[in-house]
Length: 332
Image 1 (cartoon, rainbow, N blue to C red):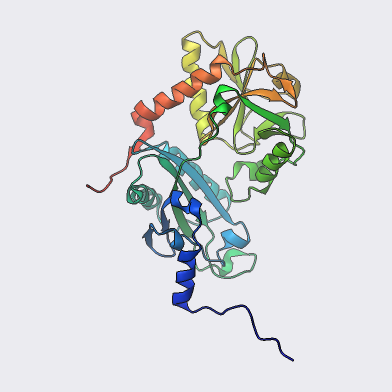
Image 2 (image 1 turned 60 degrees about the horizontal axis):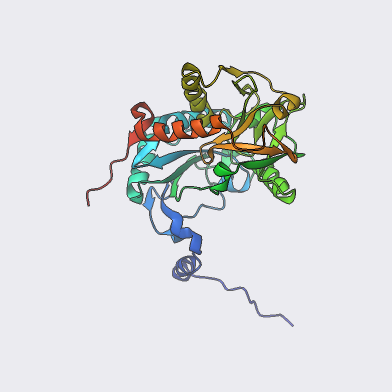
């Protein structure tokens, strides 16, 4: 006896209707998407989909970056875009358009969203074409942009501080750490492990026993003699935000609030002995770490340098014209 099929076979119209009916509540924070597959921008969350045969989906052959949209201005767009292009070159993904057009699409997608404060993330992928391993089958590389509600961490991260643990997840080899690819499985596992251990995030330690980075954030320290320290970037992702923070930290040196800024290897022992420990990234901005593996950093409270650097970041977003790109919103 043949059992009748219970899995429906959907027609085009029914499939589209089901896409609309299954949009989840969080999609209200997805404001606009550009897809080079569609050749345009959509604002209906039901249409914010990727082809399953895109090699970014089933092989992870894609790279991405994210810029902040604040007060109708894209902050550090060009720096983030330059890193995206560098990652694409390392991942051997050809550009579907010249860099100038990629930049234009990002700006116009931000404008189409109508939002003045959001996050703007964009991907370059090997593109669709099949389910093999090599990209020779792909019909061409693809470009995607999404404007979505900015990620906000709890206020307690800044007022009370963050707790971290030393991660047991193997760190990415240097080449893959420097490529901002869509392979974030190790990064996800770091966070899951930290949560399992009652902390907020984890810290990667390299094979030499030196401090590397956090899940998707850089790690910096302030020593007891007021030196702002950060690991070298040869084996970790060169964060756009930490690069800017290193510049802003020099303002604190000029004001006498820091003694120096130094980029050099940092051992675990040196890190634990620091006066302050900070997580720095485009989503978290600057957050103080007050506890590492159950032991306090400094006096176990958020320190002054973390607070001052966060204030400098907010000032930068508002006033640093050389870091801002205006979004041409349609007239109301």
